[in-house]
Image (tube, rainbow, N blue to C red; front, side, top):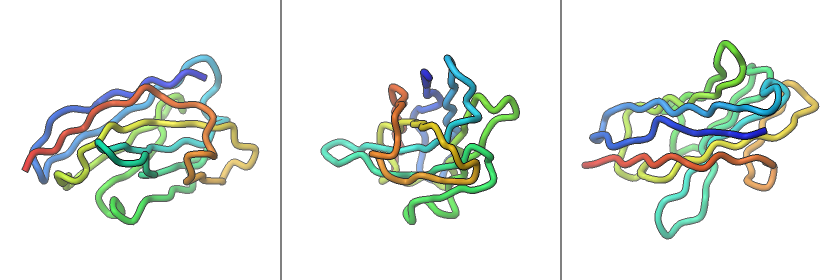
Length: 126
C-alpha cells in the first residue's frame, strides 16, 4: 500500500489543521493506521492510532483532548484533526499503516508499522 500525507502548513498557536492520509494500491480498511511526528533533532514519536474497524483509537498524552483521528467514509483515507495547536506541535507528521488481522486492534509503536507516508510539515507559530 502507498500512503500520501497532506494538509500540513503554517498556523498560529491556538489554530487548527486537518491532516489527511490517502492510501492506494490496496484496500485500506484491512489496515490499522497511525500518525507519528518528528521534530528537528528529536526521535519520531507516536501521536495517534485507529483500528481498521474505526471503533478504537489511542492517543499520546501530549495530544489527548486536542487531536482526533478518524477514517474517511470511503475507508481509504485517515484523518488527523488537530485543534488548539501549540508551538511544540511543530514537526513533520507521518502517517503509517499495517495489516491488522483483528479489526479492533490499535498499534502505538513505530516498529508495529510496515508502510509509511512521506510526511507533511506542520509549523505552529507563537
